[in-house]
Image 1: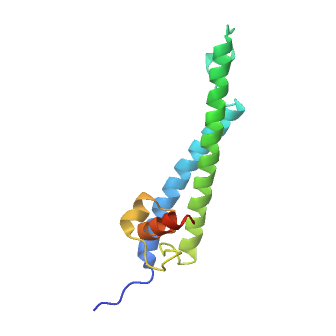
Image 2: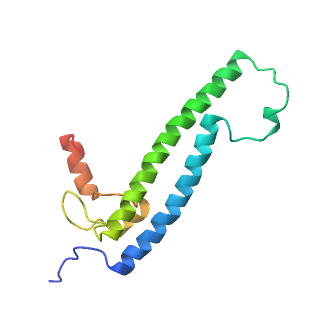
Image 3: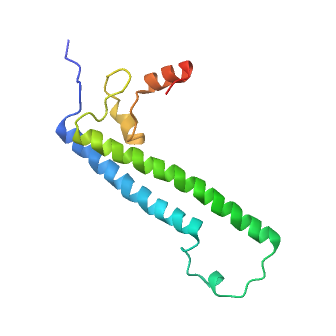
Length: 132
């Protein structure tokens, strides 16, 4: 019987690093855009300079979009932190190892969720016990 791999090879880690760096750049760009929306510094369109005849509903809709953007920015920031932590695990050569079972997380899962720290089985097991 073949010995089960305990970690991904350096070549495989380099492939994941490239994928994560790509996602990280996109996530940071989106985060900066969301922050600009929240701070209202992000647009140079005519809305800023034209006289506006806003109604109360417009202000409410504008406030909602800022609140929504703020929540999205917070979620994006957490995603960035998770991706940066994944890069650190690549440097430590512990990337792709389930923190519960110690088994390798399948490549397919890591390609979809590159910051995953659990196999699907471990995640389901923890969900059943109400732990993370």
